[in-house]
Length: 239
Image: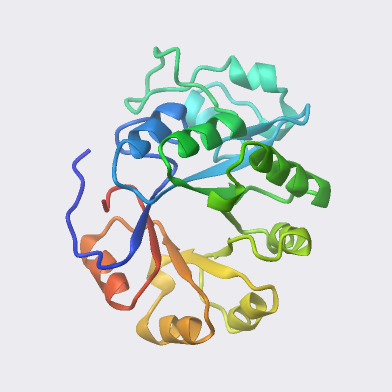
């Protein structure tokens, strides 16, 4: 994958699902590839398995990246771990391309001193949110984690016990109610980059809200976002 040079100013770039342009998304190989480069952070997604283990994976089912189709949250950890994923050419063959654990992802972020940008996929219970936090805390890395989620309730659970933990609400579009909700729960924002403009960026910054966006691979758009003072860009190639 050829990286794209653009004037990012003070904007921090986050590797989307690891460096997924050259390694299979959301695998240890992709996280190490991002770790070996200048990315500020590494983004990934966490699910819970049928038997209560936390694994790193994007989709609800495995078919898109493994051919064999299993529902992640209705499958045991051992069964998922034994599943070989396809490489970026769509073929199976590498024995190391498997679904990682949450602990493996955090360990790689820690080794390479990258901020972990962790999406809480789907709706977790309050207890599960705290289990995830406790795993990371026990590894001594909680202060280097930004939690993100499309499920507002996940972040409300987080806020109840960890009021100062960096957290960003994921959303597609900028909605009229959004600003007040972010202020109410002391959340930052992670939004589809095409939904941002100079006006709503100003409103967010005036309210003291940091802004991340997904998933911007367009250098021109990246420079415009940097001109507006965006704090983070999540990208496959803009680094």
